[in-house]
Image (tube, rainbow, N blue to C red):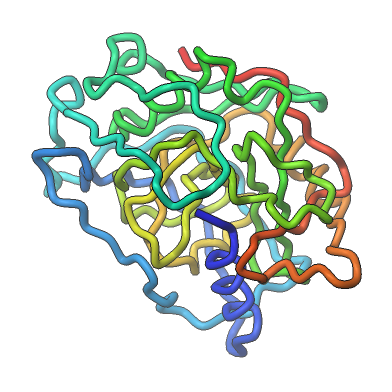
Length: 290
């Protein structure tokens, strides 16, 4: 489970030519397309964006959505308390920090959880969680309880210049975040789980799981924070599980600081992994889900 596919897809988007995508404020509409057992996972994995666009560095961004929208009237949400999650062993050979498997039934604490707070060296980033991704939230709650994310770094920053999209990516427990380590972006918790809630656009503030665009249902511990509405061009292939309600100024500061590109001889799109790292180092001290 590497960054390679994500990076290559981003490079393809960046190379396209067309009208610049002008996306206004889009409130996150969280439709339940559950990937837990008892439901069908509907994915667009590997699909290309329906709008051809080349984002510009000074693209206008909207405010962060103030709240998570309710599901549409046509959606038929599955009762999160009745979901059974499918956490399976990651047998891909990717580096792992294994702390066990989350419970298959989401815990009462994870079902009640409203926010995930990421405490960093730059301040707190608070994510308002959606109730429509019970298996994703259950996984984060479990990993946080095991101090899985403590003393890790956000290993990848994408910009219009480097990848054609605007993301800060974190959650690889073994990443060095220096732009030189070929294995950055390959680490995970030793288990994988299916997609949930596919469909909403990845506008500014939306936080979603990171996985290969053609590797559906292979979520682990890596996640990305969108810091520009231009990311609405991405295919609906990644699980959106919340919206940043505090700390976007931290993400903006990191993005403005730029990227440590790989040194000579290191190809960030190689099959071995590798990553563009933010010049302003983001160290995660603790993650709290409650």
